[in-house]
Image (tube, rainbow, N blue to C red; front, side, top):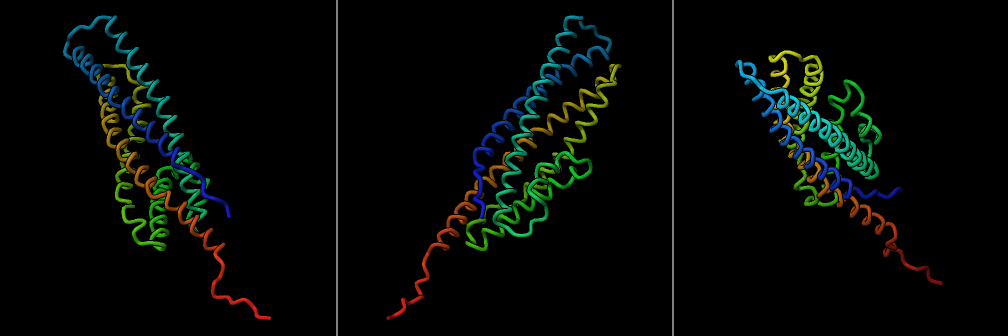
Length: 236
């Protein structure tokens, strides 16, 4: 039987990147507010210098590029952790609903990406809890899936809003259109704050329990090598 693979370091890296994303989200909120203020000034008949407008555009572009880079890296590290966790569960639990590869692939398949990751995350929590509870009822007493619903709801809202912003902002030209795009970006960044916090909680909660699977693995190996003391040696 294959041994479980370490996943603690992947969890730590994923969490660290999520905190970085959160930091950039907060910076983005401040930057979007400054842009909104400029747009309101123009909408109300005020004047802004070309230099001010140029500085605003440059700041927004730099923050957007940093956010995109950090978000992509964060997504990769999260999926690496997610897939490894599901892989390890496959080694201990029987008849899981999906193959280990789906833990990574489901994020990139249209339509399926709207529900399959949530299904796998719930199964990850529930099956691990069931597995550990069979061995010792105290093992999984703190592993609950209450946060998963909020995590997934915020992720879907954030993703849909992100799609809207990407498509709308690329065509926005008037002050009103730019204002709508900026407000949408502000809302998306605000939603990103609880999303990041809950995602960290989801990873942490499971990571605190996952090492117990290694303990079960060790216990099973010990059971295999313990001699059967009920057998008596044959007498000559």
